[in-house]
Length: 505
Image 1 (cartoon, one colour):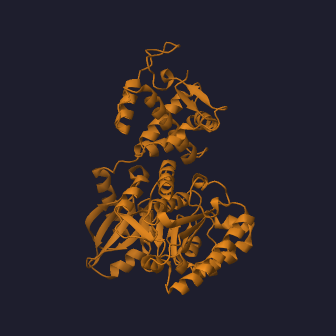
Image 2: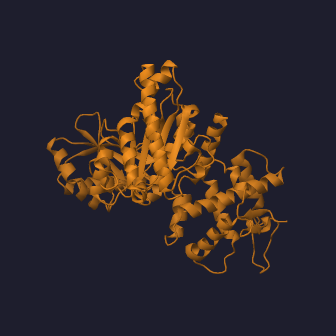
Image 3: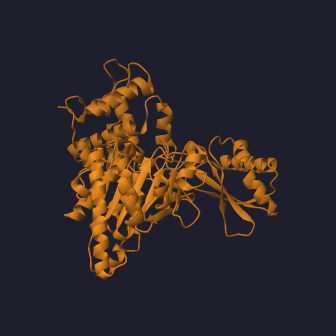
């Protein structure tokens, strides 16, 4: 009897890693399972029990502990020495799950399978065939450390030389490290140096070898001191795990509203915005910028947030990919994730009718908006958060969908209906003037051109971000804040759905 089982999608991932990723011959499949286990153990939250269910077992495979962990093996059939890692792996999993797995072999096998299948899923979703798999593994497994002191000194010296080359006199007074950037607090003795600095940022970036990535300036409260946010090498980045969302939500003091946390600022402090006050949000970024992960961070925030007991989610996913994990959610508006243009248009028109009915109802109650009605206890209508995963695809399928979206953007704020519209093609045809003028809150992830940044933010800058969840968040009330996104995994989504459903029962 086998110890570890995989499904058809797992086996396809193993095949691609062996043939396209590692590109070596005669390597056993279980070697990929070990890599998958290592990847899963780098994730702070335990794997979901949903990984016990294997949909496509027919095309899956079976493995024994002798293969995966080397249990009981001194040498293989080819007489090559093989080391027995079973006790070490069992000890690692015992510590990870805070349970004695030496006393329960069945639990050990079950948890080992979950970790392996989760690791394979991370390969499947995080690595793209054609990209360097070895570099992907390095980033996933070894890029969590901070840069060395020698690297810091080297970067400081290079920055000082670059400042001299663009004619800026200044003294670096302090160095602060964030998850991805180093902030240098630069004292400028002459106010004219500030103009020279801002004009020379592109040359300074070139001098430091930052390529498309840019150096951003940040104001400080000290006289004649400005912050310079300089990107570090990718192998020094610190990932922000999705488990942090639950921590931030638990420490959130205010009641009500729709608080969401897209990530942390450049120094690692959590950034929150209230979707109920936003009141709508545009999210744009090119393929691979982290747009979909950003949407998941917003959704997980809502599912765990203070208003989850009176929240409906209307999810529109023309690509039929990103919102699959939410299909079992009890609080789905219309009871499903909408993907085809006909049902989506009907749903948007139903939301407009809902909005009109709520406007009338709130007027009868003498409440300015839904939050006031909630505070007075005179009405318990739920918030409705409408997420459109790919606005460009929706409008391509049905241009008529724009009219109800515009009406909702114009009038739905007071009624507790809030839009989150996202696209990887930020252009004037997608984000029309009517939509942009009624949606002041924006999130811009990395884009290819300055003109695309202007479409999202009404200013340039997003074309110089570092990618992979790096974003500029603008609420319409202040300068955009640079945010590094939370890395939300499938387990984080599954846990949030469970929390929401249990509360909805």
